[in-house]
Length: 114
Image (cartoon, rainbow, N blue to C red; front, top):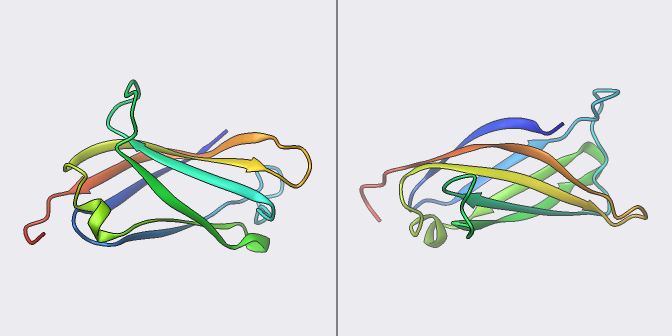
């Protein structure tokens, strides 16, 4: 089952968040070595098109850290409001299993200076 998270993006600012993934069985960090990570932001659960594709990196695979980011130019193009997102991974180390590890809501706040 995916972990739930609520995140905030300040429109017109750089967005960067690091998420630590833990193994459900042991509650120890989940090794993400060999994972391909993707994440999208959508206005509703029924939206056909993504409002943004988050940039996903794995800065510390051994400790289960993944990083989601968008630069200020991209966040400036997202209308303020509530969005749904998830983080999916493909384990390329052998099984090629696809999993949804994180899901939740991203709140995009109004910016005054863009």
